[in-house]
Length: 232
Image 1 (cartoon, helix red, strand yellow):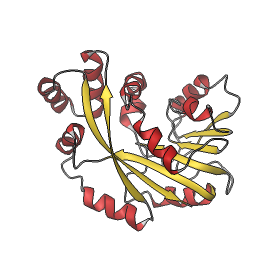
Image 2 (cartoon, rainbow, N blue to C red):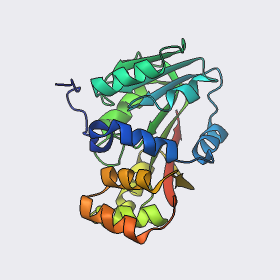
Image 3 (cartoon, rainbow, N blue to C red):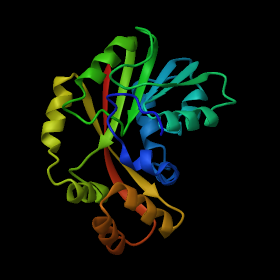
Image 4 (cartoon, rainbow, N blue to C red):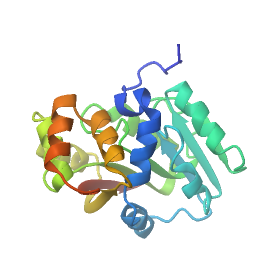
């Protein structure tokens, strides 16, 4: 049985289907909108970067190109091991098993924290936010990327899959925590319809995924996201 850190919030899509999630990662934001937005707010050149919930480490090499040091933290030991294999030749990257609410890092040790679709979904993530406050240096920044359910094709799918989701409550939560929202539109771009079908199957219930695939032609999906950010 694969070890998982106590208290970790389950992430069924990547935990159960890491190879399909890899396909999804490759399809997300081919235009680099998210990276450009983050860099415009707080570049990480020569900085220490923390990637919380790094999964198989998909984003670690990108940060490592210009950061002085990159630390990936992942609560699922099997995914963390896959991330280690991915960055084995990168001397400025380390991967540690740990949870967002108990980061295995010293106080004031990182400059930029990046969290993408992991743990920080609004109310209930206060312990993780306290940990970000602890590990970020003065002048650092935290970036939290999550879905914007109020617009875009994907946002409509998200609302159908989770009708109880309250975007207003989520926005009020982040505002109270001192974060600012930057609304961005990215896209999925797949090479094959089979890849789109596989990704839909890990993101939505089977019946809804099948309906979405039948309704949506082509290989691209417009996708609204919120970039929540805060300086420390």
